[in-house]
Length: 115
Image (cartoon, rainbow, N blue to C red):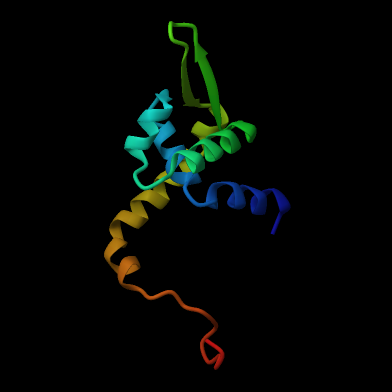
């Protein structure tokens, strides 16, 4: 497996990263808007994920010169390109949500007595 693929999976697979990125795909948003779209995430973790996604050039932070200053986050072209990957995953999860929710997590390989 190539290293860049593994790194990409690590970035998007971090807890809440995909949810924040999907919220960004709806257009430029303020911090408070993300709180409404990504329920259950703390302010601290949301801020951290926004910074991480910005550092990977998947979203950009835009300072709007108003009084008071308004800061919005929007997807970059690179981030928008991920929708081609994330959208099928969203569709799959919607179709199988009952099966996925009902499946207990496996803790080991079949036949492994230490599970």
